[in-house]
Length: 435
Image (cartoon, rainbow, N blue to C red; front, side, top):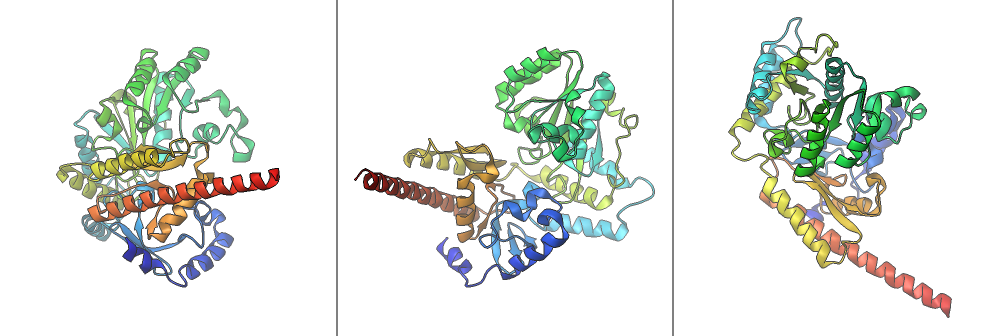
């Protein structure tokens, strides 16, 4: 680990990064068209803000600095950057064409492979290009099938009106969202079975569906919530846009053996290329044409080719995700260290092996969490890139995961020392004031 740290201790590391940042903000609002990658979520001068290339578990920024990537393109590259098998398949498809005037043969092949991975539980699916479109499409299908209009949203399900309304605090005019969106969207913050039941009781007659992120629930609680909604004829939609690939071969639904009416997956299914899907039973999916569920690029062939390569890799993987046990061990070690350092009243480990973080208990907004800033900057000193969450891939080696673990343990120790020094300083000020 020290060798890696000294490698990055250069006099100038971010010259081109900072020059690029100054220019890009004049041209692209927020510095990036994907908000989760925006420089405002980073710390320019302490972390890189622009990438030049990436391979396996590493990337190189535009100043030539190499970083161990613990973000993995927001989790969309579970097989590692520029995975050889995926590259070859995409290159082969590029030579044949990327978008046709008729359906491409590989769209059927890709769909059959995905449905096979889920053991034929769902007979059909529909592709789109983004997770937001997939979940919004599922909501449209549920409304059409039920003849009802209201949707219960429980987390971030994309930037579309019905989801963003509640997730961003009920703001409408500031977000460009119609004020009357509240008539069709019921927002439940930090959902529990009890809160869901209370909302249903208050408005039982017109609820078409509920959208849940199952990886954010404990199994027993999720099962109770699903059974409650199903007993009231409310269509269950699982938003596994983020967790679908990273929790297991059959997503969180398969890990828990709790299956929704409609299952939405996206990030990682094409290892970084844009692709999403909604799976469901015939009586729901057959309405896709009726509700005009469509996108001009849903059948674009390079992403489908990449997804086919990923499905083949998945089929051959004995254990998936391959980082399940190492990530679980790291989380357990961090939780033990918090106890040993007496930090359990300040910090906690949140998430699963799919994606985890250490967060301040007193801070609801992760982006403004002072510990996140401290950790992200300190991890950069170890040559490790993160925005606060730790997202691994099949390309991360055992040594690299140990490197991350050791760095995090050191950071917790450093944080404890800072808290101690601040406490001593406060006591000295108090004594001086009393004197």
